[in-house]
Amino acid sequence: MHSKVTSNLNWGRNTKIFSKVFFPKNINEIKVFAKKHNLIFSGNNRSFGDNSINPKLIVSTKKLNKILNYDKKRGLINVESGILLSEILKIIIADGWILPLMPGSKYVSVGGIIANNVHGKNSKKNQLKYYVNEIKVLLESGKIITCSKSKNKKIFEMTIGGFGLTGAILSAKIKLKKIKSSMISQQIISFDNYKTFFEIIKKIKNNEYSVTWISSLEKNKISGLLYLGNHYNDKKFNKLTTYSGDKKLNLFNFFILKIFTQNYYLIKILNNFYFFYKKFFFKKKVHWNPFFFPQDKFTNFNKIYGKDGFIQFQFCVSENRLIETLNEISLFFEKNKLHSSFVILKKFDEKGKYLNFHGKGMSVSMDIPINKNYKNLKFFLNNLVIKRKIRINFSKDSLATHSYTKNINGYKQFRKELHKINKKRKLNSLFSQRSKL
Image (cartoon, rainbow, N blue to C red; front, side, top):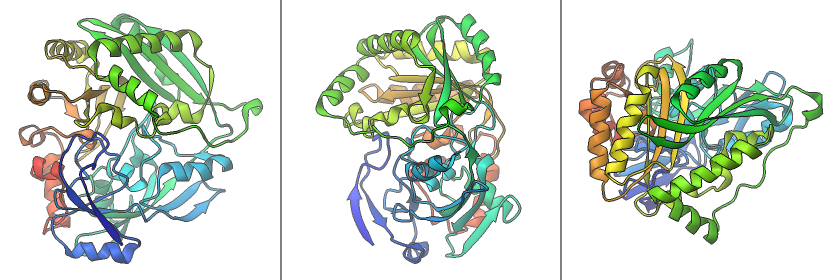
């Protein structure tokens, strides 16, 4: 077992706290930490927020990265929690299987995507919880339990989307999806106003995957591209291949992207170019890797945001309040010289409990570079979600206050049940401390 002291503890690079991080090699070494107080378990440090950060002690599961069992015929895989999705995909794609739901990056741990109950581009059943059959969890007492929809059901439901507060996720059994091709049949539809946008998103119901990228956002104005996709089921495209080409930023890409993403005017130029290129030169047949993971092209792209990093802010708002909410945000951005380097919209209709991200309407996700107006941004966003009673995605959050979280549906129930499972509350994070869980 080795350890290190580091401050790079999340993907947003927005939390400057030095913590001691341990890397146990096996379950027995992990069990040692069940006796300690004030710690949190983490995976590959790919969370945008602070739910896997403890100011004193973090225990990483990165070395628990084995495939325990893989049933190629039935499409069931049992893996240790520290294994990355990228490693699983290298194996299962060649056998005609894929994860039924893909998060925004494949360089995330299985334990991490379960603890955050991630969602992706799925048009229906867009939460990981639908595809997890069983989890093995180490409780703060040192006891290891197996939980599922029929066994230890309450702990199972609280662990998926429980941000590591119920215990350390040691392994998981996941149901896979059968595919016949590595290719995705892709359709891209452009829009330059809200009327067109609301018309074209009706096409989502006929497609397995959908997501909307916004190129320009101003008061009462919107433009962007709607991406629709389905797995190819054509014998001409039945070749099953993994991926290649992901790489780190070189100096040229680093400086160019850094200049553009941190400047309000330049990001508009870059987005307009991207909009033009995709609108007129998009491919109707694309490999699954760039379709699901376009940002993985540069494996360390988060560094372009500089030493202060960025925050990802995601929330769900009803369709009839989308325009007024985005107008309020865009006006605030303009006044405070702020911007979002990415704005992603997703039609959302998911039920959930506890602190899981759910709701009906539109999911809005923004990557906002941190600058000197960060305090104003925190104050504005906290007031916005409280005033409009908007539900945010806690798995990406690093700024919501207790005055907001305490009134969210599921908060009191989750807190109550959590104190029953882990009475001593040894497991905690900056998120749980901030939320007074």
